Length: 513
Ligand code: AHR
Image 1 (cartoon, rainbow, N blue to C red):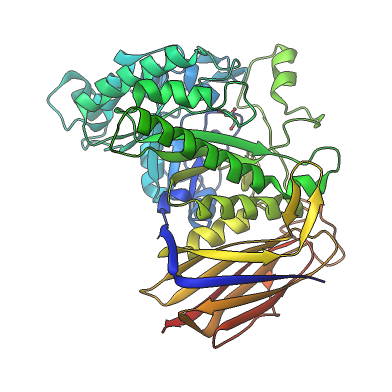
Image 2 (cartoon, helix red, strand yellow; image 1 turned 30 degrees about the vertical axis):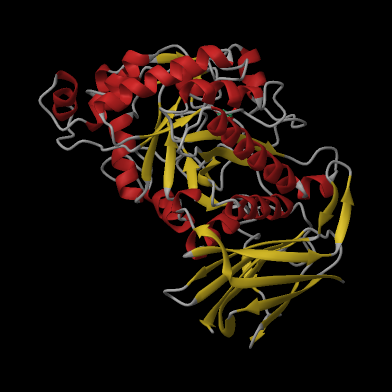
């Protein structure tokens, strides 16, 4: 058995838990919108055509803010196509995902769906094929109370009140050569600056996210952020980061250490943004929006739902299956550690969106006309969104370590923690990266006295199952949470044992002393 000691001091706080860390993403891609959240005719569809079985799972997931409508899709999208009477909306080719877009679902539908889901809208504008004018027009359409052509058009289209969208993304992955309308850092930085300026003239209360790098492995990473922020620093509030991880060639050890890369990525972007701040003598700090992250089997899958195969087929279809990854136990443990990384950096990462919400690399899967169910990765997200409250507290860890090919020496046990003074609850989010060994964990409390354990749950391979176990129509939801019976808490100590390759949450009452 490996071992780890975690020390938590109630005075060593990182900052308040940013509730927008538990964001998700709905793109017009594959079956995320159509037959995902929206399926008129489905047995559970409401009057708006929204699947209520999915709405119920989204509520359980606890997503707080949802980015929309893309993604790569947005860089070729005309927002005007998605408003007005459904029967007169144009059908278009979506080049990003080689699909036919009916435009049956657009801004009004997403705003109505978000209201029902209880989530905030994070709207992305098209800076690929469009620019300043379309961006400011969309803000006026969405947020201006009335008395102008665009705001009155919104009213005519059925929304008397403004949508009041606060959070806006200035394009998507503009550093990526695959992006429609891909730009150099100078071209994009200037465009983002001018678009942001014009959007703020319409509504000064909005918050703006400028595109950072699509991954820390991009050849322009670092220089891109420096140049773009050099132009747009005054106009924006956040810089974006995107990262996807997967297991390569059976190297589970490196895959399980993916959060080491996420830590590095976040810290490098913070350093770059702060360097631009110093050089420009700016007062404000730019925070981070990690607005796409997840496990995604981008390489090595030979299934028919891969974007290159769909494009190569030459066939244009409405909402084809695209990257409907089926997640296993190992993926859930990695997602738990990525969430830990985000939470540990909650002083600067203020927004994060798991990509995506339904069907497309998602915690929720659906069948057209059929069931909706939770994937393995649903659980770490749902529990952290539910229980991470109050202050993020530093969890100083001394853990046995293991060697991975990509990341060298890495802690076997990974942790993040929150303490809510008002409710008197401490929450610990733990992962054991050890593939074969359980981990004995000793938590030492300083300034806090342990009381009743209110929740102790673990996600681990089901009995007789292996680390590749997953939830499918055939298996049912076999990967989920079960009670963790090894926790004891008293005085200044919490002890527990984490099974091999597991993710766990422990919540307990604490008194401050
Ligand atoms: O989330 C899937 C895709 O990944 C998004 O459309 C794009 O922004 C990223 O490359």
